[in-house]
Image 1: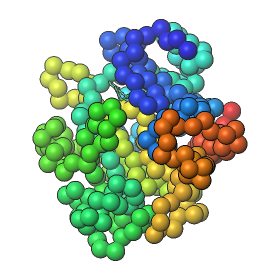
Image 2: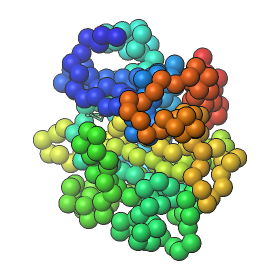
Image 3: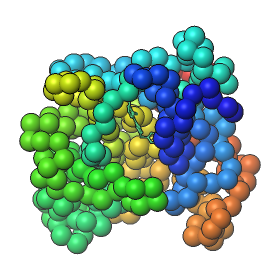
Length: 297
Ligand code: PZK
């Protein structure tokens, strides 16, 4: 699909285009990654489902942002994008957003112990500078959600957890405190909504920016995609059982198939069987329907 705008950034599974000086178009693809590789087989509707979920979450989180004097970057999505020259094939998986000065930190909130958080905890009893109680295991619910920021890694590298002082160095003390407070408030609200829908929101990553301004003291603006399975860990609440890795709500069929085929560590990543693709598409649609209470069309 050719897009009539200049490409300004490209991630593993999505692209960013410049619409004009003030606005960007975020386009989500149907590509899926697993074990750090982008698979050659797309998952039909994944880009549209994740875009619809993000748009829904921006609406849900409006009150939390307002309480903190913050905003979000979403301007328009869906059919409204036709008027901006977005091709009809892309409107369903595109968001028109305000162009921000992005802050150079990943704002991670964790309510459960998992992945790199568990590794750090087993090594030191903490996640960088955030102490945790003894006796936690992979999948444990934390006594309180924690802010565990990371640096934005270069392409092909992994994000690296940093202490709060690293956020202060990067954005200043006042803005660092505001990022921590807002990140935790957004996570708490998101996790509460997800829990009511039978989904554990184990952790998530937010990205914030500020509006370009000469003074440079504008409000924090929530950017990127929000609370999607690509920026978060979603676990089915029904199978949550601390002590072992939890099945992923969306990618478990893909991971299981790659592992049982012995293809989880091979390059290039293999094509997925049709049944695995179909089951995975169903999981994304199910996540959307379960969270929003709306029927996927
Ligand atoms: C922006 N990224 C990350 C990389 C992606 C996304 N509102 C904004 N203003 C300015 N820059 C960005 C945003 C947003 N969101 C975010 N890169 C630029 C990124 C690769 C693919 F979809």
